Each structure stands twice: as C-alpha cells, then as structure tokens.
Image (cartoon, rainbow, N blue to C red):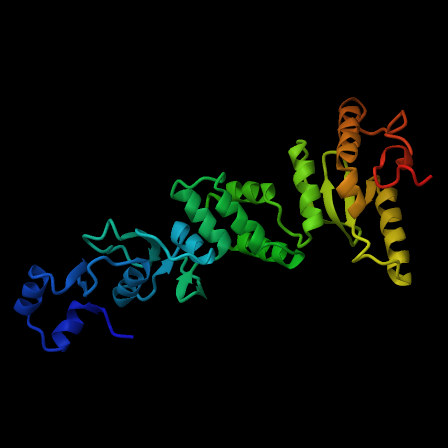
Length: 306
C-alpha cells in the first residue's frame, strides 16, 4: 500500500526542505493532519487519522465511542477518542482527535486497531456522555458476553477497571441479557423482564447452574428444550437432585420447556406476579392458595391431551 501519512521529520529525511513542505501545504499538494503530521489525503477517515496518531503517539489506544465502533466492525468515525500516556496533546486536531491522558493503556488488537476491553470502552463511552439507552451498545454487550464463558470475561474486565463508573457500568450490564446462547432463553427472559422482574443469568445454587434467577422472589428457573435436553440416565439423575437441592435451600424451582415458552409464557408470568404480590405481605411463607392449577387445564400445548 502506498504511504499516505508522514511526520515532519520523515519528510525532511526524504530530502524535503522546510520551505518545500510549507509550499506543498499552501498549494494543496499535502495537508496537515495535526501538528507535525502530514497526508496526501484531502478528507481523512478514521483509519488514516489513527495511522497518523501512531506516528507520534505509538502507545495510543482507542477508547469510548471509537473502540465501540471497532468492536461493532464499523470504521471508526471522527473525531477518534484515544488515550495517550503524555499530557502534550496534539495541537490543531480537535475535529480529528479527542485525546485523554491515562496510564491505563492495556489493549487488544481488533481489525488493525489497538482498543481497550469492551467493558472499558463502554465505561469511557459513558464518561464521554454516552447513554445506556443506546440499543447498539446494549447489543454489543449481549453479543460479547453471550455465554457462561462470556459472563466470566465480563466479570474479569469489570474487576480490572479503575474507574468511578464501575457501579454505573455494572448496573447497565445487569439490564442486558448476557450469559446465555439460547434464543429460547432470551425470548423468555425478555418476556419476564418486560413484566417488571429483575433477572440474573447462569445463577448457581450449591454448584448447580440455573438458567436464570429472580432473587427478589427466590425463584430459580431452567428453560429446557427437548432437542437439547434428552433424558440421559446421568442427566436425569442430576436434574432431579439439582431441583431437590434448590428446594431444600428454600428456593422455588421452576422447570419449563420450549412448549411452555411458545404456548404458556403469559400464564407463567401471571403465576410469578401472583407470587410477587403474596410475598409482599408474606415474605417467608408458601402460597396459601392453589397457584394456576393443573397444567392440562391452561397449557395450550396440553389442552385436549387429557
């Protein structure tokens, strides 16, 4: 690829004089990106500005909006948001660069850019005035931390942060549907949250992992698909003792199927709402009346089968 960015020193090393450089700028042969950096491109994009920044600040790392755009697979837009280790910020570059002095310069390579972690990028984005209501940012969180392994990565990145926005960031992450890779679970979680319940994914009770928990009700829930949860002998035993353990510790354990999500989500939410209302006045007691009754009377996948 033909070089299109040079520092002032590089131009001098190529034999250009101070006067020739100044003349080329006046004639529009080259353009000053920012102090000490020149280009032949009249309208630079994010990648070219990044190339120019690395010429004079090789330790620079993208953060905030710019890092998020890179993680989303988008070309970073101008101005670039980056961290640098020195206080001497580039003059004349406010439309191209927003630099911040920081010693937190840990990075990973993504699409040819050095970027901070996803958690760090979102924390700095919030510091730039970004909103937690940004759908694209929420989508990035859920895509990045989509599995149980992703949740561990999220927690590791959060612990590594040195920022006053850690609490705000954790609350934001709690509102995202992270930690599961099942579309079935996601559909159910969206419905439950839409009814006003706060959930947490991949919650453990005595070593057994549940798909989600509603801690305010002390309810744990597993969403099982017949396609992926066959009645193998070992799993059959483990699932029974998983439920036994949760119940022995005072949890309400719900085991629902793909058909429950498809045909009975409203009834399940109605049951949870009834439990929530009862717990407001009887926090330690079981329901004193029958719940929603035998499933064959209300479950659309079962009506007519008994």
